[in-house]
Image (cartoon, rainbow, N blue to C red; front, side):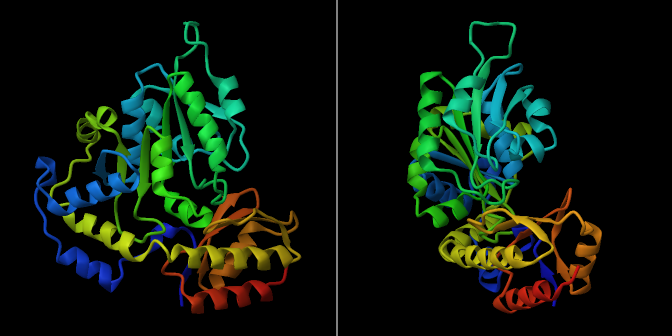
Length: 341
């Protein structure tokens, strides 16, 4: 039994999802003639209270398109030092949009409105880059699946409005945050100018993200998607997977969260574990004692066919997901409890 906890991106389509994909009505999406993707875009836009949505092959591309739409070359983006748009998108912000990133020293990938205010460059001071955009990631990937306080999100949004700044949400795992915090998509739609959401993580689709915004913001989104190479043809097969995921896999995220919390509790009791980040959703980040070799620990897991991610410096990550079964969970807990270092 292989237990793969490297990421929630390792899931494979269920039989029900495959059936939905194979029976989808399709057309040419470059001509906007695919009925299934058109319906998905309308559905997701409506969920978030926005007027437009556009399907992308990846969350990184959706984020990069949003940055391009919000900024001009030479502008500056404010984000956390842990932000996905800075750390894990290949330097795309600078390559695609010509913008620099002002990194904030947040807590687990989350910063405050006061920090944003202090980071905004004076717009009439032409020696510094023009601050144009603030990007928030919820949940935070590198922060261990942490969920933002919506009150702080609102305060930052008000600050963006008063300073004429764009406000983007990297919502790759926003579905986890909505379930964990009992919040609604519509709440976030009213707060942000643009939102990217992903279907290939906790929701279990094989491919796909969507960028959401209002008419004025989204009018050139399809052009930017084309420039980035993201135009696809009979994409309805993938959109059908996303629709199935929204119908069947949203509420069950609670199961992933519960399993992750149980892993975190057990790890906290093990003598060779130094710290465990607070577990709110489906990501568990923990640190080994200095006396324990990360290589030895990973090897011990792999000997039991358990696979996690080493983050360096003795930190590791496990991510629960819909293909991580109850039987796998029970086995993992037994293996962890039996480890000796």
